[in-house]
Image (cartoon, rainbow, N blue to C red):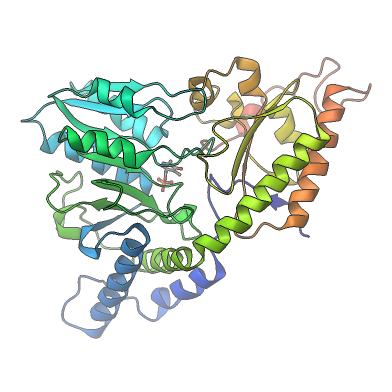
Length: 406
Ligand SMILES: *Cc1c(COP(=O)(O)O)cnc(C)c1O
């Protein structure tokens, strides 16, 4: 077993070696521009992009023509929200979303509000799920888009998107979902689920960073947010990042092939982690529904301790916390607060994102390491390794942390 152990799979995932191998020739051998029509370099790149597009589309039950490559889920969300809002100005200016969305949805919503749109931020139940009846109650004749994430990036819960999309569809409103966390982990079928727009990113499913896609159902009205050479059917101009797209395609293909087996393996590992922690520690609770949940995801609160202390103490284990200092925004998790957790429980939260490369031995190590750390933190012995006699952390350490909880 090698240290440090990576269990922060919601933030990003390691590029699968098979993905890297597929990408490499597209840096030095097949380096053509996929838009070059008059030579083999261009054709090779174009064909590779076409294969990748088919593979990514296959992962979500879409057709290749309905897929627009972007730089990631942030851009896909921006294109979906701003693009649909702009194209629907003649119909209305009301957008519906949920309080627990990723900032890559909440911030575009805030921008739309600045520009005069009205946005409803629906609350969730204490298990993190949105009740479809809540959605039905806020849709008006002015509603132009409903956007609800498929899987939450902090607590891993799976929203009932098929039911929610159905509610939107009955009212003739397009339904968008940010599937950055769900894609490649659980089956998605945009047709069966009634989804009109869906955001993806490669780096959450063992592909490279900086490439993603937006599924746009044929017939949807979307205004581009980037103008230029008219690439991607005019919806997203800019020379395609061919090596990254090839990697995305390979990563999607691997997920399609291995999702079922991997989900079974990871949910067992996740349950082993949860059972192990419950057995060795009192006062641990799960945040979010334990049933409507990604197989590899666990978010807990550990009473009587602070998530920041946990992260510091677990120096050989990479995990995240909903505590303030781990976020760019320097404020405690808006997701955990939306579940109704108090400040202490938010601060005491810790997020595990298991993945393809985690092993049983690593889970057992983490259980043992975390339990002994928590026991030490709850029963402080006179020597406190970090901070002063009162247990205060060194001032200024927070400023060094970076990265959104994403
Ligand atoms: C990671 C993540 C994003 C941002 O994706 P990028 O590709 O990094 O821009 C958006 N939404 C969710 C739910 C995410 O987990």
